[in-house]
Length: 294
Length: 235
Image (spheres, one colour):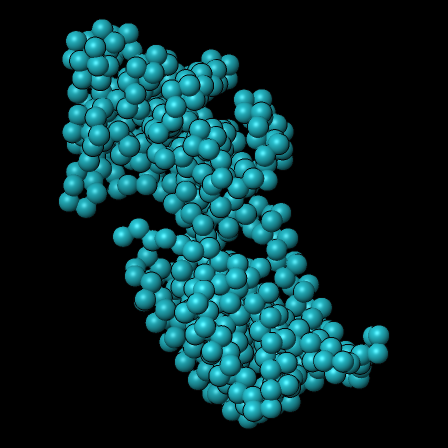
């Protein structure tokens, strides 16, 4: 039984990471109806920035974490300004193609700057475990869950209680109406890209210690995040987080208790989740079925 | 009386379709002005030209200054536009809608203003957390009105506030608009298909026909006009 709970907790930790990246995808999709395929590579790039700050510039972990968040936010806003905004008003497919281009660009850029060499990233959390009711839980899992939870809570407070957060939601749900009350919709979309980049950075920095840092590090995580976002209902922020947690725990248990799945078949299992959701319940767990008038 | 809003030779088009063919409208400060006309006459476009949600040509002055820019700039200048079909954020709560109405304001008295709105619409306090989309049609129109007022506009533009609502509710909405006009001196430009109720509230009115001003004058004059009576009042 203890082993089971251990698996659940470590599933929650990876699920928190999927949830954070899924939330980033949902933020942009809600506001623009577009999936940002570059979300994972943006996160990877942010993680490299954090890694550079700690290894080459003498930062300790948490200051580097904070600086990376800031840089990622500015980077997200900058990307929106430079390559998304010019095509925002056109057909959505153009934006999607640009995000795919961005994926390739960031990936190539990372290889060029940092080489493809695989690097170990130390965990910011103490090694070892703590015993909670007979279950040994690693500090790294607890730390990961805490950071994800905090980011989600801070973000939802921002959307609920601040004027800018409210304006961002208004711009997302009804842009033309938002402009009538004086909201600069395009600036709000830029802010959304900034926040999404920050969330991605968190996901990336939490992922790196568990795997190794290399330019392809986030590609699998992005698939999990897509699955999580779809499972929760692609436009539901709470759904993204819950979807991430369900997926994290589910895949972890599947990998542990179903022999042939192991760790190799987790990714295909996530793809099955994507397929299953799209076939059986396209609106996801928390989404609304949208009836489009033709 | 000086004009708060003045349109001179304003044109607007949707692609190849010219919706306004050079109209001139004056809205004196502190009055209610109505724009009447049949479907497609250009009533809605007139308001959209002012708020910058349609491409426009010609001259629009507001409070003595030329009015330029998109809807964000127009909202900031002090014009609140309640579009046709209850302009609310249906997915946001009543309170959030009201807070958004005050978006262009920098002062901290937003809470006090929500309470002031509750003086007109008492239900908004109890149902602050309710999603706007779940309100009845009349309530949504009232919320749209309250939200527009939250911005403390100098000019309120209403597009077909009566659309799809029961007569009793329409009368209530116009009563509140008149009260705001009489008590606070709010200037109102209202577009309305229900000519009778519009003429009862407005001081002056314009009748549009295919993108031009066909007739204008005081409400009393227009009510007495044979053509207006037959075409728009139906007796």
